[in-house]
Image (cartoon, rainbow, N blue to C red):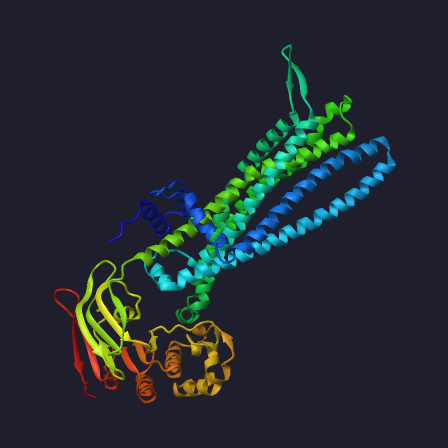
Length: 615
């Protein structure tokens, strides 16, 4: 058995504590983030995991387009910083012209501002446009890759069965979006802030001059003092805003959890409306929903209180930033060392430096959320890689001799307990076999092994080469869409005519559905369990597989309808090999063989095969 890293064990323990209600969802997220940031399994480090997530797209077949778009965005970002520098210089000339009442220069600067502003607007628009386009291209590529990875090799089945990934839909739908948008935002924001910081620190240093003051009979001089004031203002202000707003991170996670819990309760009522109505459980459901919404309301009031304090701090910080540089630079202005234009240039440069520094401080919160997203995707990848790396003890291969053959087949539970051992049997083309035995003896597991989705065991299974086969489970899967799509699944509905669809619906006692073939609905909610099972038989008659596997496919049908369905299989699919798992002896007459499992005193099941069952 493959040894699990302590990191994965800690994550599993955290998830178990969350499901048990011993810790909150937000606490689980924080634990995952901390473990991811501090864990270093072997030679791997978290940042290597980040690179493994990011690099495939930039080395893919779309790399030239991606790098081209990124290069254009970088050029536009640098051009935007250059224009900001030009506008900063424009401030000095324009306000000097106002102070000196120089109308020709004033008019020329208005014209210069017009074209600078127009270019700035065009750059801003296309920078956002290209960034959004690149983000969507990247997200689309990653979504397709992850869907292939998740759906390939039955990884979605194994990860769900082994409870290795929680909410894979969130990983693909939300986390990939957050990864691509967050990565671009952080990288481009870092680039823009670094270039802006260096550009305007140089400007601010050169135009602010030194600050000289006396303290304890000693003269002190601070060169480029406005740069230090900008640094001090940005650090102090951002730390205060961060400290005041810090609880919002936890409250935000809690709000998402409470909202999802409430929404899930509503969905459960819709999915189980029949049972709730029969139980008259409306009051119980109402009480549960009210309790869940009370959590939403209580947490929301907490968010409102923190947001109010945060708005006070952030608004004061933003508003005071407009006057602070002028206050600090005003002594040099009133002493005549600088003119109005230089004062406004200092104010503008101060704002740029302060904004760039504030980005670095504020980015830590975004970086934490981004790393939590990376952590979840890295865990998703690790889970899929783990199930793909698991050894398959059962060898499923094609055969040219028989439709189905079992050779020394042993099936086990994931914990190693044997269901049955060393079973050998075969099924020729056109034969029908009934698989019978008590519950829990491994009948349904046998079908999973034949389908190639049960890895626990040993031996080999041979299936007819080049032949089609279809599985009809007890709970038939009916996709959301039109009825013709549901009836044709997993084939395309374009392969069948209306006459073919109507014929199989009539044969399977579903004539009332002939008029709604093009209705779009959630048919698993709209149809009764019996109708769903009859629809699956209609699907089999339509597709005409060479081998048909039924797993309690008539459990919701009465005896008469059940016999009608099996009679249709015999008459309409005479050349189809059939393997039926069933508890009722009434269907035995439609089969030529029986594979029977019986409980063994030593544990597991004893297998026997008999031929030509009497009718």
